[in-house]
Image: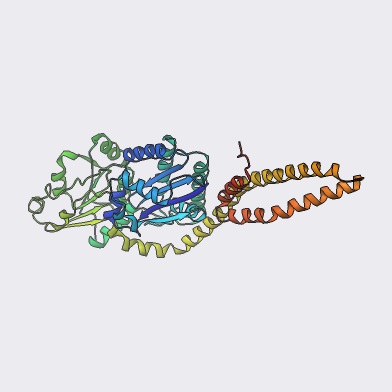
Length: 424
């Protein structure tokens, strides 16, 4: 089996590309179904967040999809030309793909190092794929190991100490613009996990008033009740924008919900008071043209990166500790998988050679004159020595390739070359 991942993230692709490649749950489920129909022998998980879209794949040695097929599959699902985003993609295979997954779920590859939301997002993506029937034993083992690695990294380092999330970084960003929050009305548009987490950070800053609105009113009311803030009707969005001083958005809408048309009269209605808007969503919630209105300042998730660079520097020692844990756990995973892959094929290969040797011994024995028991034992010992010497190099190669995550490739190759029956 081959393991690989293709994807893009906040470092390799601008927001304009990431939002085109983003999947919500319904589109992801449709893509997984299409994948299963196109590549029934392969396994996949699609991970899509505000900072990345990644397709994880496990497939038999000679089975599709190849790299170019996976890229074209992604393009078809998003109704794009692959040339529009291929240059933004990264590609890892075997041990490097496994290491990348472990780093991602452990938040070492996140824009905000140490944030815990990515683990929940990865678990959700895995559950969605398993529910669609595109996760089998190989992918299941890989992701379960990854989740255990993430738990170890977060428990054995201080990488997640304090407030660590995109939402907390957004508030740090707002603090660079406003010296005080106690006279500000802050509003969150969106009541999903990111929105609720950001609201919790907001409350710690003691703003004058905190509002939450959402297209599904019941969801906004539920969050507001739990956090002790005010829910407002989404239908009054323009009035709410007039009222607020700081607006954060984090919805799952595929199209902008704060448009230039909606906000055309906003500066005048606000009497040209400054309005800070931070868009945490991918695809974006706020139309780019809104930021060109008088005294309306719009920032998106890519604008937060200069703050996260400082954040990374502060957590550098924790990152290094996490990287060492991941390095050790990748080696452990590959060793476990190599044992599963190499052991059976070595057993079957030895059995194959022994059957040939017994057949040849049976053929030659009647042709020899006066073969003593001692002579027969020496011939059998010689045949065993030949088998051991013949097996030495392939077994060594299998073990070495196991450390690179490619033991299954070589095991399958040996089975094909020698016509060995696959494991039941």
